[in-house]
Amino acid sequence: MPQNPSTPPDLLVLAFAQIAERGPTRFSRLALARAAGLELVEVHAYLPDRASLVRRLGERLDREMLQVPVRELEGLDRRERLFELVMRRLDAAAPFRAGLARLVATRGCEFRLLLASLGNLDRLGDWLIEGSGLDPGPLGRLVVKPALLALYARVFRVWLTDETPDRSPTMAALDRGLARIEPLFGLCARGASMAPPSATGASEAPA
Image (tube, rainbow, N blue to C red; front, side):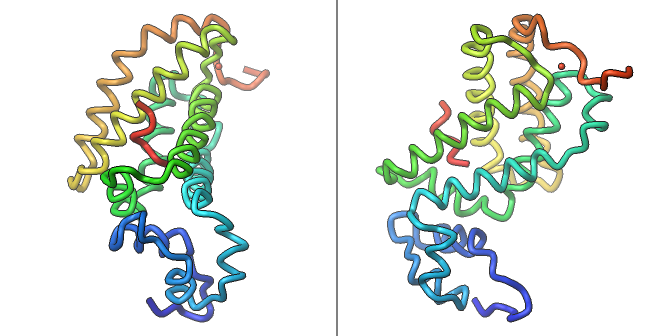
């Protein structure tokens, strides 16, 4: 794919486009360098190993998810905050969906990619808890965090095949899932308001 010399190539977009076309087992950083018009050393600086593909994507999606203004979250309850955060993350993943679908569908995908995915999900669980204003404490977190990640994995699977313009099947799956786990929010005894002081299966989702 030719690159506009004034625009830096987006290596993640190019990498996941290659995965969508060739599959994760045939992903090549040499081919990526050619597509991006870069030298191998430049690709290495961004993707030093294959697992960094998944790590970099997870970090990007987290950043996009957390672009939501705190003031906007203050007007929502905890369930609404979780809905907003998850949908923002999935919307940010749209350019990578074909590659992610190929990654999920590939049997025997590399173990290091799986480990990187689990690292992403562990970090995501923490941000969903904190960004939504939940405060389950150490013991409650042992229950709430796995429940949130299982929900994310289920919704992610729906999103992978959701071709509707408004993503209504994805949103419906997320809404149902949140309704199922909402009773767990009672564990968050200290999860109060996010208002300012002046006024609280997972391996199936590789990102």
